[in-house]
Image (cartoon, rainbow, N blue to C red; front, side):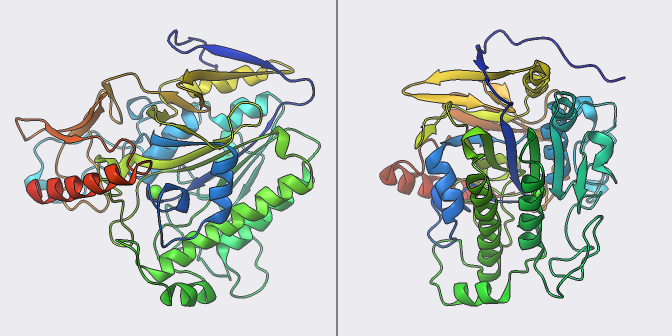
Length: 442
Ligand SMILES: [Ca+2]
């Protein structure tokens, strides 16, 4: 039998919020491979995301939110379990010895591709507290998420991308019945999410809408792709089909948000928007951040995050405090508290004038090792050398540090603080980031 962690972390204050009626619903939008600036509210002038932007305006946006890994499976294993990679063993996607062995200095630790059932997931904690739970979209942590606390699974299995199941119907996914030929997967998952909310409006529910979008293959809807072909590219955002995928993702979120409002559930629903890792270098740009998916540079692990928690997050507020998804056991401790009837426990920290809220996120203390404690990382993805170099990353007060095993010195670069809050600073940061990239190309 699984047990719930009980140890509390002293440096975070606990605030108990009495809930007179039912506990708050939770909707978690988790987007695949979405870059830090791939939404309008984080600065894109090319992609259009009005619904997500509205969500950010109604809640709190986070300028320094980190995933636990620069690629899919490990990031998701940490999010679901609330634990670092060394505890669950999901360090990367597939095997950890991909790449040219001749260039590899160390024998990498063996990787696990499945999150073992013994780990308590967010869904299991909430299910134990009386929630109805659903996952819709990408799972990537085993063949069947219903063994990990989800009552409903639509389209989730071990696949890390939609290539086998398709972005357009006829689909090949679990529990997704084909309807109209050519239907678009992102639209359909949004529709299924709305149906789930409608069917469970009387109960507390946890909806994990974990889109396959915007992962490769890049396949947008034809009409939206045509729209962006007529639009002038801005910076590194210039792929019409990718922009169409981003807009469809945004439309699905708009549909779910409208359903919450129509059913008068929005005042008692916590909504989170986040991504599993940075944008793919082949289709988007993470500038002014350096790097991309697969790297431990900020472009690989720093994500757009917005949380709307009615009564807790101040509308239109911004949190600059660095936070990380599911750090340690914090998330599990938090969610386990939902087992208490009629009580919701939130970890809150006052930051300046804003109230910085961590739900399945923890505020990073200075100089905390971000992604790989205690073992070094063999990254993968769009970094051609990623699997060959053992490296790890720190986040300090003023700088981030990426440490490579085969390099005697630490590689430092300025933190991109406030890059989207101050245009003057943003321009300087862009130049700095580009300069660093050239100077230390490897
Ligand atoms: Ca991913």
